[in-house]
Length: 289
Image: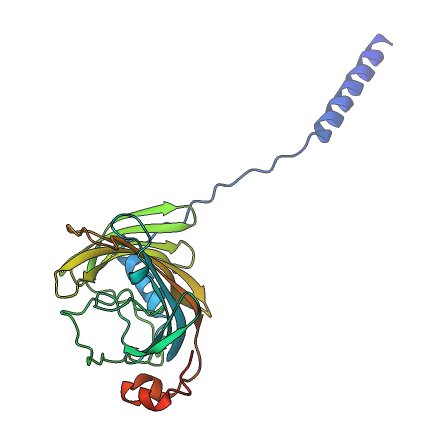
């Protein structure tokens, strides 16, 4: 009888233990996923450039508003050299019709320009090829650049990198972005990029630091460092803002300058006379504003 009671008690305790064990939550094993390794720095830079160039050639026409602001060397707003322009731009030859807009909304006369980086003109356009080397020398107003070639049909895909114009000195992950530091392998005056930030997943440009130049009228040329910000618009990376700092001993007005690109659009066509300054006098009544 005593043996039966002990056996029953043992069975009861065993059942309770099983019941408690069954009531415990089951914790699934966590499998750590190793981060996807980055390609080599040079391959990564080549992929970033290829991603940017995949959006080219740019739209044939661009319309935008360029706002330029700077301070005097005393820190006060420099109204004489701060201005706003409406710009109608043709991409294949960099030709543009520009009209200055006053603070009160008055529209100035028509001006012909070729917006480009590293030249004696305002930077631009919003779709500028930031991987393109700067020209060998200052361009005359009559200069007509070679149009960008249209993308050929894709027949096969080959991985060919070749020697790049830059050496990647570091790659760092900063949140959702990759930060690359660069130094030119040759011609640092032409190969202007110094730092690049891209989306870590898409490799689309987010920000760059690049060199540029300040051209003083009848004076020396000073080096400038531009910090350029991008966003996607209509599936194309466009420049939104530029912050410039002049160095090299420059002490005049505009030691820092800011450009903002607003109201960007890509019309399908624009009148041909917009890009021929000889026709401006005949179109005073139908000029765009």
